[in-house]
Length: 370
Image (cartoon, rainbow, N blue to C red; front, side):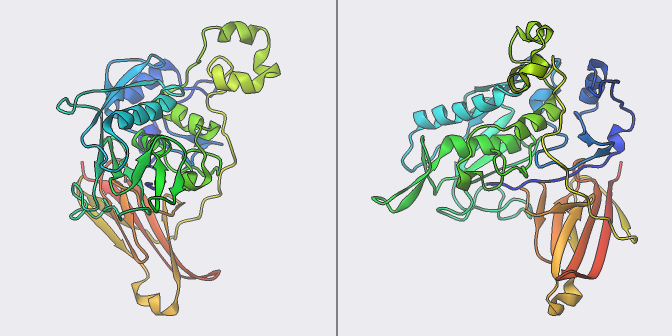
């Protein structure tokens, strides 16, 4: 599965302010929408890198519709798996995965024919697929087991599944008859759809978006994902009787029920699900690079002290980066590559440590040339 965690520059948010209740009003949402972005995540007065996500640029969000009305997102299947599962069951599994997200977001998903343009594109591919051989930030698949699938952050809207896997509808299990793992398509697809919508890996081990969700078997969308998707795309009640329940005091007496079905009425929309992780301070010396959008930028760290057996840690805007993210960045031991765009603006830092002793630090601030 893909691995995604990032923080974004704070400058786009300076002109926007919350209401006294801490919720974003419709006027602000419209401004953010027209600006091409949605909501930043603010916790205790500062922008925070969540286990889920910050802002996103999904093409179907840019239409003239207003939250919390349903926004219809289309997807098309460019290729189908060759092992075990047929096209009919593949469609059934993907539709089930999309329904999981439509239940907690303002989106409704529908499949369109392959030749029709769509917001999201899905395909089952072999090891060397699309541009993975040429791209520094798009890894090729590795055959059976290993990486099962990966998805690209918005606005790309692509989800790739490894066609060497044996996909099924049902629980992931080992087949002694075939000698291979049979992988639950719905589970993996739901995880990757979360990435395609802009969600990152969760720190919550019980979350669908946790990096090890396939191993733990967690299949339901947790409060962590709900919090993240609401932060990105707005919050809405699920039932028409929510105001009536609120008048009866259910927001206090039946808090769990109301969190699930009536978050907007009870003002539960942006209640943070778990504590934040303290950020690491950047080094005092920072090089600023102004680059053109689309340019590949590579940072190199610790090459002169590798012989000292130091370990390299990478950060973006003070938050630890642990994995490579398709369509976002490629993370290696002594260097990291990104494609410059609006999402990737920010400060990147590498810290080389030997146990608890810091051997050296480097920092770069990336800005787009406008």
